[in-house]
Image (cartoon, rainbow, N blue to C red; front, side, top):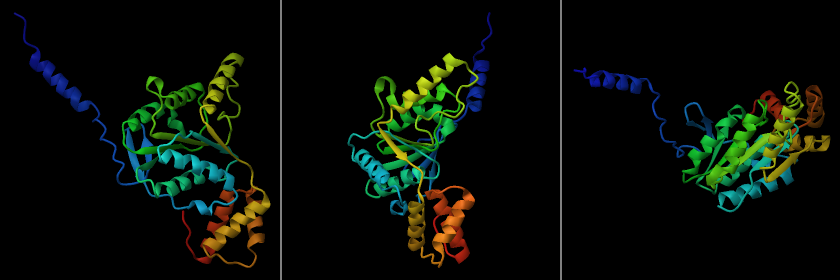
Length: 279
């Protein structure tokens, strides 16, 4: 007569259940408007509101208008395009994305921002599936996106934006910032051979075609840089007699003129004068 192994199998099954990771808690988007997604645990970590307002961004009026119009349409449930903000570093791509979101979210109660790390692009299809079932509308932001690891990340992003057989989520707008128009890293694929390199390049360029809205950020000239410094100094009441000269010296030390450099100068000046400005 065969022995009954049921108790042993039951104990094994119970032990395996204890070892298994707990099911992720349902996402809660009620306590904040900005969140950071962690794919490993499927968690959404709340973040404080973005402090820099849209009016503070100087020299990018056309870019602001185009991005804001597209986001407002999305927030109202109208057709809108996924957006790629590209251009030289420090020109305000990320700041504009978040400041515009805050401006629109002020009158759109169900709008949320979810930030994803550029190294977690392969998790986007699963993230979009989670958000698809939610009643809120989401702007998903990936800052400084490029495909350092080749075509795998590009294919994942294409899958997320196209949505497979069910189509892309109607309640998700994807926004990426990049220093490169076609998202490809320098020295791309140089060790993989000509055919593989060409295939990867085609895969990645085809991803940039999925963005219906491309917004370019050119280098900042000196008058625009000084206008940004003056606007910031007036906004935060930072008065010094030689503001322009000091701002130019600061940019020369940095070897660049940009909105980021202007803001870093303002933060240094505020610290010198014993005043506070947003982080």
